[in-house]
Amino acid sequence: VEHIIREKKMMDAQEIIELFSELIIVRLPIMETQ
Image (cartoon, rainbow, N blue to C red; front, side, top):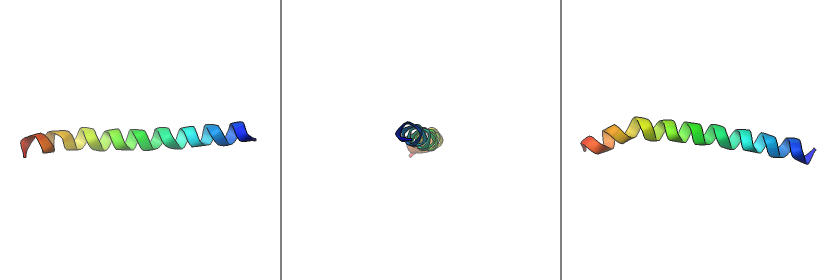
């Protein structure tokens, strides 16, 4: 059971990292122009 929970947490973490990196990629050009 622990193994399944750990995989779920890893998947959640990967989704958060993907969202975060997308935000950074979108905002970097905006930050550079300011």
